[in-house]
Length: 301
Ligand code: GLU
Image (cartoon, rainbow, N blue to C red; front, side, top):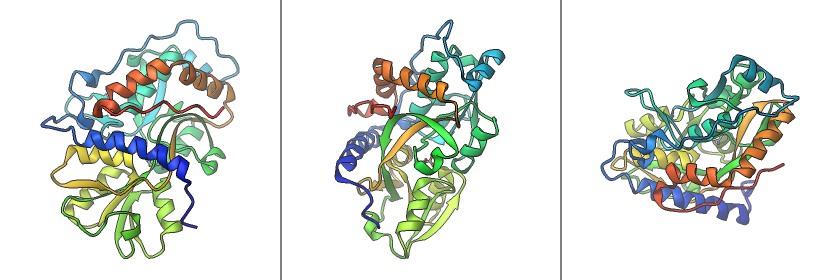
């Protein structure tokens, strides 16, 4: 039951994890999330498409007539989706992917309305029409595919563990029995712990930064979610927290879109597939600051 991952996929995740691990080590004095400099925080500029040919997409029709796009994101995940409360600036790999997708649909950055939506509310936000797209560490799963569609994947990582810097007894997921592990409600990692790790206590919050606060306060023993996310947190407070072990699932990040909008899904998949150089630029400007190279994953269809 526990042995649900396969070796081949794990090695992909391990490479990504290694990249992110290196990121955690490059924080040297910077106060900007994910190890990026404040220059890089502005991110690459994307060419905004003109005369976009996309028919049969109800979501795109709405975007086109309003001239704006609403994109659900995370805003407490350094290096991926982060809002600097002081400057109002959003940074991270997911924010840049979102901005790129908007540009390919003919929408410039100043016409993107980012909305912070926690893990548990993603499917309903897309189904209710609260957002047009969702770009925020959103794993493609068969269960979610019944409620939303995905373009991608555009990134691959895996579930990992974050503990206090001085913790010596949790070295991997095998050491969790009897421990209290924190994750976000509605996420794949909390579901995995509940289903496959009997004897592990769980604590849930809506967002991961609350788990990190609980870890530092000592009310939980570990935080679990995707290693890419955990490494971003660790890079912010390397004197207090650390990532341990290897990724023990495979999480493929997709761009969430309203169920049944196949025309939009096909369009965004083409943007991803044709835009290899753009993907690499985004990666290099964000997570890739670690210096470790990873390949863009192939889209599923
Ligand atoms: N990628 C996992 C998920 O989609 C964990 C990260 C998150 O909650 O956004 O559930």
